[in-house]
Length: 90
Image (cartoon, rainbow, N blue to C red; front, side, top):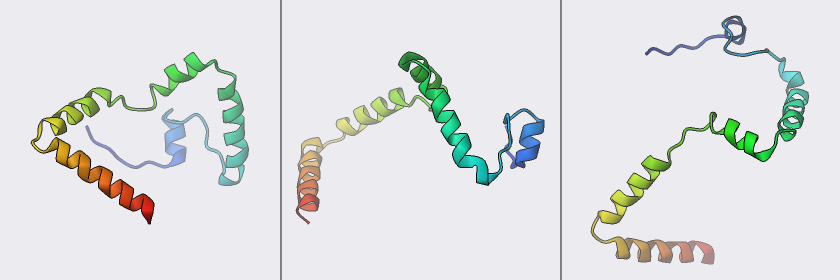
């Protein structure tokens, strides 16, 4: 798969975007979008947001498990706690 940069107008022509809005009109367009989104119930909002964010939960859990199997976990936790305490004291 290849990627490429294209203009807003080209994106509109190919159906990648549904509108091209001048920058001066962005605040009003954002507000309109917020108002429309707020009409959705929370389940629908959650469902739609699921399509906009990559689900990395499985990979995150695998990474957590991998770090916990390395020797020295207790020492790393203690060192983290010390560094956090020192940072808060500053």
